[in-house]
Image 1 (cartoon, rainbow, N blue to C red):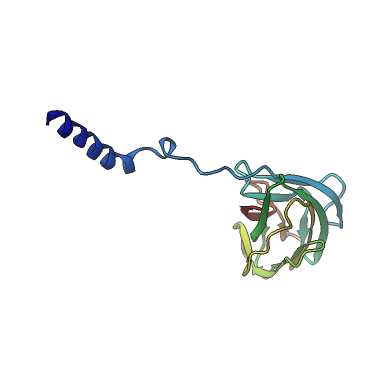
Image 2 (tube, rainbow, N blue to C red):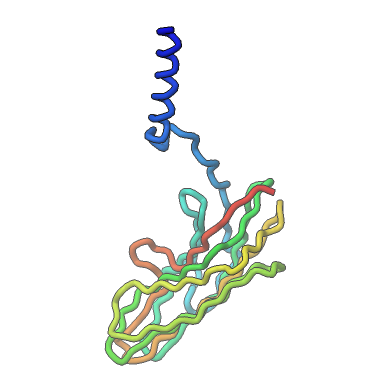
Length: 198
C-alpha cells in the first residue's frame, strides 16, 4: 500500500512540475533548414560593384539583402535591381511571408522620401510590392512592410532566382538624405520565411 501511494505521489508531482520545466528540458522544435544565397548580379546607381550582399539569419527563418552605398540626397533618386539565387536542402520548401524595407532618413523640414519596391521569383507567381513616403523633419528609422496575403511555396527540390528592384527618391534641400539600410543591423531588405517539408 505504501509503495502504491508513493508511486502515485511521484506521478502527480511529475504532472504538476512538467509545465514548469525550462523550455530547454522539453522537446525542442525542429530547426529550420539552412538556406544558401548567392548574389548573381546587382545593377543600378544604388548598388555600385561590391556594395551588395545577402545573408540568412542565424535561425534561418529569414534572409536579408544589404546595400552599403544606397544613399540619396535631396532632389535626386537611385535605384538597384538585384538577382539572388536561393537554394534550400532537398525535402524542404519555403514561402515568403513578408518583405520589410529599412531606411535611415535624415530629412529636414519641407523634405520627403519615397521608396518603391518590387520583388518576384523568376518563373513563379509570387511577387510583392510597396510604395511608401515620409515627410521631414525626420531622423527615425523608417520601416515598410509588404505582407503576403496568400503563401506561395517554392517548388520542391528546386532553386529559384529572386529579383528585387528598389527605387529611393528624396525631395527637398540637398542637405536632406535617406539611405536604404538600417545603420544598426546593416539590413536593407528582409524576407521572412515559412518552411514546410515536401
